[in-house]
Amino acid sequence: MGKGLILALLVLVAFVVAGCTSALGGFCAVSSPLRLSAKAVDALSGQEARALLSHNRKGQKLCGWRP
Image (cartoon, rainbow, N blue to C red; front, top):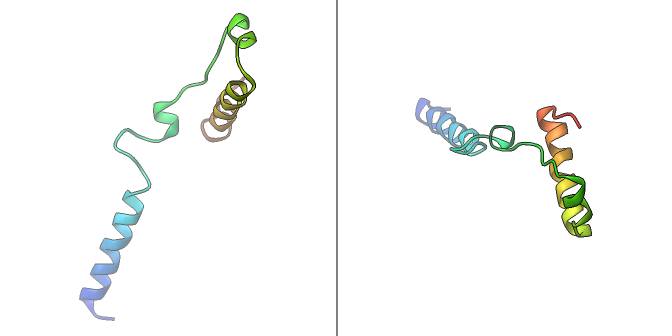
C-alpha cells in the first residue's frame, strides 16, 4: 500500500471514531436517574412507567447508577 492510501484510511477511521460521540457528551454526561414521588408514580401510564424504567436501567448498566 502506498503512503497516501494508508493516510486516507487513517483519516477515514478517525472520522468514524469521532462520529461515535456527540458535542454534548455521552449518555452518562448528559443524563441522570429519574426519581419520582409516590404520587407521580401512581399517575404514570404503563408506557410511561416502562420508558422511565428503561432509562434508569440503561443508566445502571452504562453509568453505574444505583437504585
